[in-house]
Length: 303
Image (cartoon, rainbow, N blue to C red):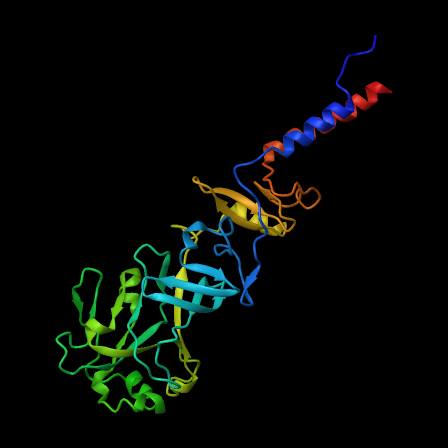
């Protein structure tokens, strides 16, 4: 007696229909770099690429990688993924090459960044009659007396720069500040401080007395999470040449594969099978394998 079983054609059609059902998450191909800077977790080029907590701060538009806060948008010059440090430049910042007015710099209170310990800010051209006396303000507007009124060596070096020396003011109008003391609540409002400009740098580059050699800009530390642990799901995804990200209301993990296929773990399956613009969850694939076994069994019975 021959067992009754579905035909191979019917099973194949069912599998294809099932796997191509619309999904709540459409796939995309995440950019691997922006402005020649590699894009790796937690940063990403689009929604679903990288950690959504960083999307408002770090964006890639027209191949320009930008860092944005409430004080403005700033070019990102480099990202050190080993040290977890992002470097930005402020076009309004004064350096040995150029002195210009600035409104200052600040981080959003909820941004997942803090200032790197080696970061140094020098406030320039501050009013000697200022009621703030060069003090900075914390997030609750209380003054913090951090200015070196005795004249910091850093100020002396900065005023040796030709561009900064044109200010032609006493060194006492320069104030040095290391932002790590205030963390992410730091707000540098130069108008409130009655200073016309500032200079920021994150390395003396081995030549402390030569401000022309300093690395100007702002260095920001970031963390993956509270415990600063790299997500294990991301590691598996990246080993398969995927880009990990989180998507949707519940920030579900997805692995963006090079062929445009999104999966829920890695790209080893997706590298051989692409279903265009739909997410293929792991339970879909498991069912596909079961149906594949059913096909094989059906073929044997036919024989």
